[in-house]
Image 1 (cartoon, rainbow over the protein chains, first blue to last red):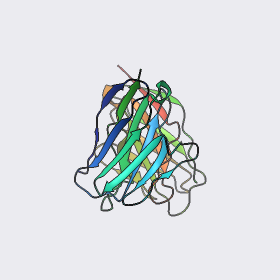
Image 2: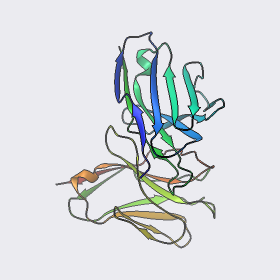
Image 3: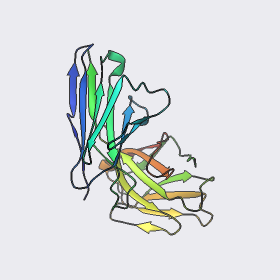
Image 4: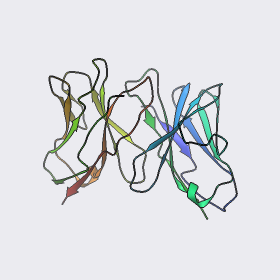
Length: 116
Length: 109
């Protein structure tokens, strides 16, 4: 079945550095991908919609200059957390829709980001 | 957006059927009901979806009331590996999924 892969699965960085997270659709093409953030014991919060070949659409309250999204191909979207600080530590999850499939979304296994 | 209401938590004995309710009284006629679950530290996993009729697959059964205002996800023989947060979602817009708080299901040995 369709699979969405995230990399890395876990990253620890110093405060002030930028971190890039990759989201790939492995056996289907995704014109749209989604990025979520999840804090401990909370639900997933939609951050932005990543559109292939165009600018991402950010949800209200999400800083687009802080969370840079690039969707340069039909199988890859990247989320870069710029100048990360401890409050950016979270679980980041991407998803993508297979136009041929019955599910609305396939989800990656997430990236746990810890900023020291 | 159609919204859903789920109990925050439920317990179920291992080997018994787990019945997870969901209210979606404002659902529109062309909106599907989807169920996902999230096991700790993993991404959400698709379980099942339906429109009007009851559905069954290898993981679960979905029972939708005739008026479509509520549904029940049934895990027929719950195991410890079914411990997770279960999300009932009514499909809104073309692709977006907005997650509610879900039901934290504890399977008791």
